[in-house]
Image (cartoon, rainbow, N blue to C red; front, top):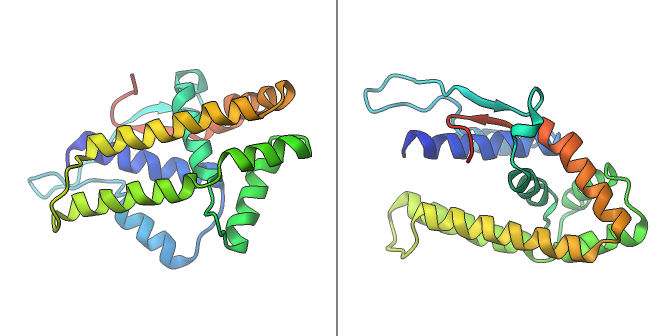
Amino acid sequence: MTRRGAAVLMFIGLTWLAITGIASRASDVAQADLEHNHQPVVASGQIEALPVAVDGAKNPERIPDAMAYRHFLRAIAIHVKPSQDELARQDMLIGRIGLSAGDRDALKSAMESVREQLDAINEERQRVSSGTQPTPWSMAALRVQEQSLLDNSRVLVANSLSVDGAGRLDAHVQQHVKRSIVIYGNEPR
């Protein structure tokens, strides 16, 4: 894996944990640590720490809007048949926005089946990473597919919310989500 690829994986893991603000079961945390190595090992076997490119707590304006929305939407996406924990986490995250009941329902409805699509992309990522099965996908293509899914979900959400709801969501992303993101490695373009 390239240094940039490791930075992207670490960034995704850290921001998901920061945005959700929840403590997972120990096994989930251990698995996340395996998938999102914070200090990648370089070819020589030595550990190389990635520099902080952007700290959203200090410079939220340097976090791209699209990136912040993707992280938030990924965090609130739940399965079609969610567990009680998923429902509680989603309600907590959406509750922070201050939406009306109608806008909460519209947001949840717009996000239906997104988690299953994200899971399918992640499963393909694992197949590509393991190299055990031939696949037409590359990691870059999967990243583009995931970004497109989340960007399309953002448009669907925006079109589903009232003007007030869309404003509240944007304010939440700008004031809270961006401040939770730390980008390691290279600054996004």
